[in-house]
Image (cartoon, rainbow, N blue to C red; front, side):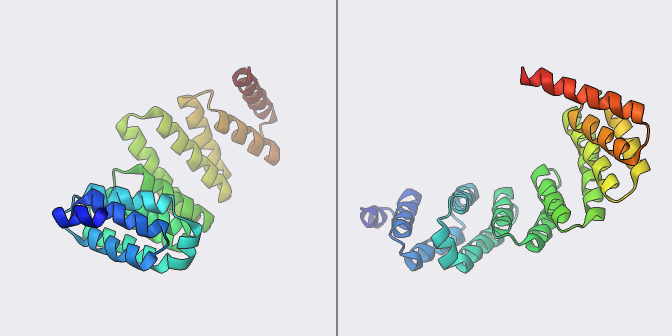
Length: 232
């Protein structure tokens, strides 16, 4: 059926993808990848269609296929990034594949590269922060979190600014710079007096350090009150 359609209209996208999917379902992976490489390489096919299909493929990848054909999947994604260098979805698929493989070094490298290339997209900042945090590159996480806060503030997104600023305090505390962390927590609570994570973390860290216990107790009580309110 697909061959008949392609004989009438060579390159017809629905028929090309239908034939490729049939090969994939039959686990005829060599045939599948041959078609997909031609499809991705064809510059006459709109980028969005190629990139969205490939992203969906990576998201629902059969583990057996990934185990058997991991290198070919990686080459296909790399080809898409090469053919569609300015497409943000191609870049996200690249990060998705690297993150799914568990290679944090590769994910960090890719995410940082795309942070520079697509500065308005916050997803790459989050991915870079995630990778760097798990690699214990806390200085880098500080820089990225600061960027996230400044972007949120500049765009007028108060909720995102509060979250980023609170995270900045958490990282400073992780680095043992408690004074900076406490100063930031105070700033967060001026912006949002009921910010749950800041109230909880600030209270816990003060109690752990044996400092300002009266204030720590008040914040703990407020944290519990807010949680009870939302649990009703």
